[in-house]
Every structure is written in C-alpha cells, then in structure tokens.
Length: 165
Image 1: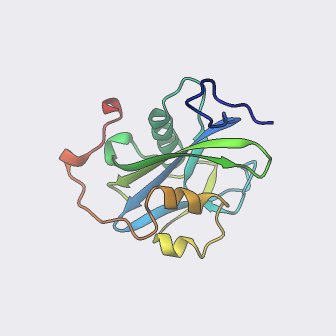
Image 2 (image 1 turned 90 degrees about the horizontal axis):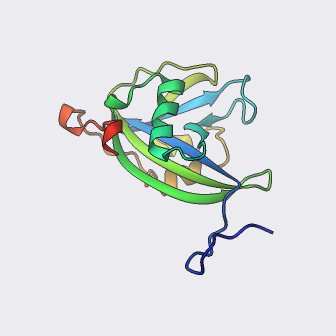
Image 3 (image 1 turned 30 degrees about the vertical axis):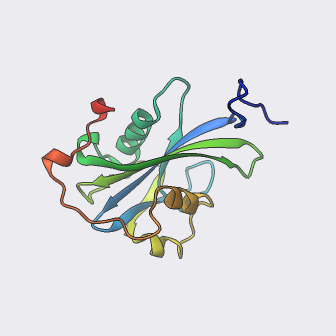
C-alpha cells in the first residue's frame, strides 16, 4: 500500500523517487538524446535530459545541473518556457514524481557526455516515430509540446538565469 501525504487536505501518494526532466527547444524543434549502452536502463532509446532529484535540492537547480552535465550547456543560454509536475508509476512498481521543464535554447551545439551517443533536433510529431523512453510523450504533453514550439529569437533580455528562481 502506498504512503499518503499527511494532512486531510492532500490525498496525493508520496513518491518513491523524484526525477527532473528537461526538454530543450530551438527553431521549432526539440532536442532528443539517444541513450548510450553505458547507462543502466533504456539504452538505445531517445529521451530528453533527465536525472534523479536529491533530497532538499530545488528541481530547477537540479535540471540546470543535468543540462550542463549531459549537454554541455550553461544556464545563461536557456529561457524557461514551461514546467509541470506529475506523478507516474514506473515499470518497476515504484511511484515517480516528475519535475518537467521546457527551455528554449540559444544554440544547437550540444556536447554529449557518456550517457548519450547521439543528438537529434526533431519536431514533437517526429519524436512519436522514434524509439523513445516510454514516458517521454507524457513529458512533452504535460509541457504543452504536442506541436512544434514557437521559434523565437534569443536575446539577452530573454535569458533565464539560474539565480533568479
């Protein structure tokens, strides 16, 4: 039986683990990364940038750290467009709380680390035809990325700075 949050105002089950997920967009396309054979699960599948959320860490800070680590992109080149939080059961029977973020990106130059073997910029519609991690589509839907994200110029005034959240 799943643990319940304390207090009568909330009946939401407490998650077993929390995950951050970041979708990057540029020029009307989203960035998908193909998971390498070196990762523990979902090798060979396309996905957004993800990571576990450590206790007491703010989700936005963690996803910015994951983006820097997995894609080599600093936070000063990202514009926060949307965010969503939702619970999803995993294939392992655990309940995961997903903190999803959509960032417009000022560059298409992604530097991959060992977790990924290739990168592709595709429309959300094209992503449906790829072999993706099973919960990617829900991330895209929750972030409002059913259609291609609006393309907008990246200006200094629109840059999202990590210290501002």
